[in-house]
Image 1 (cartoon, rainbow, N blue to C red):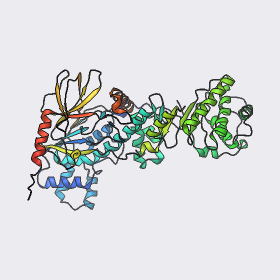
Image 2: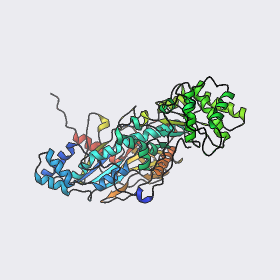
Image 3: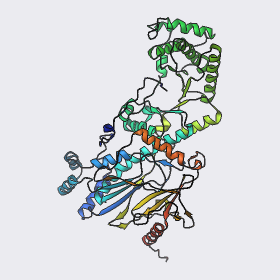
Image 4: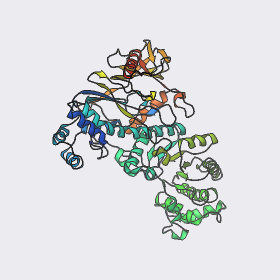
Length: 543
């Protein structure tokens, strides 16, 4: 489907393996002050080289759902690979902060050569408390990575998940286009939204720069301003179309008269449609709700579309941007079918595109009403993630010098799972994921066909045995002093998202009252965690 002048750009493998971040502002200075403050404190007491392990994870799935799509890994790995404080960066810091010169010299020596990173593949379905990224290395360096990594994962994962939910709502056969550039939170938010929306299942974007930078399909129609810029047929400079030696304008006017709409449609709108068809005879798709969708826009469009077809062109369809979209789409489809039957031409399957503040919930509502929409253009609610504007990933120290560390809180969901851990996904005999199991790296790797006791992290009464038919290791090494992975194309990641969601049981991904997915600990990790928890809480004394 081509809504407008669109050409797919085929980025070659060398471009895809660039090690530079897509935004030049992603560097060591893109951090919170307290990270540098902690690095200074670690350095000043000689703790900066201690061997640390950090987990990056989130505590709750977004959008009242029970799944999340992990995105942003490529940018994270590139940032870690390029991590350093240049002389220019340090000079800027000196002017702002009053720390000893030796500390600035120390910062200038830092890089990621001693850092090792394990991560879940980008585009994976992931769940609360599971490490998405595990970072190992010198304490100060790992600490300095925190804010940037969270920035590079939080929004991408959120908008990718939002896009995937829109895809589930629309169904696999509908087209989804990201139209959010003008409503996004700044230029970088807009570019990220386009990139990760397509990764999550959208077919393309209206954002030209994003399409060029990330090798995306670029789609678009025209605005109401194009229609209102015309007042009459007399404004049209040419009466022909393409290489056809015909009076295109008169043919359209004659067709409108045959429809019996000679005096019932807006002439300026008709002029706009004729002009747009003259510019794009092979990709004619018109916005028909500027004046009156059914009385004017629909019949002006059909007058042009019928003539285009007779001249050997294939009109694409219409866009609806206001009103009762379900009702209007049905009325338009009825008209397409009737005209096709009366004139014996194949216009019944013309595309109907809908926009107008669409969201996941509105798409579900349209499905309940019944509609004839083929394509959704989603903007504001997609790119701003209006129903939940933040994911809430965190980055916590879980081990230092081979000694597990735990953060304890009166809010149970904020208690961390200590130690260096691996993550395994257990599948049932139907090849469906049933449990994500956290296991200490010093424990035996779970194997298919072997009975495993799985413990709920916080509720001792919730436990279950599982005999998996398949065990998938979710964390693999992506960086060890240098990049250890190939960066998949966005289309490859989109396929992974699709496959991952297809594997999930339907009740886990449904929109209404989804079933929570099980995240469990091995028996050994559970026991160790709760012992540390008990030891870490001071015993109160009652007076």
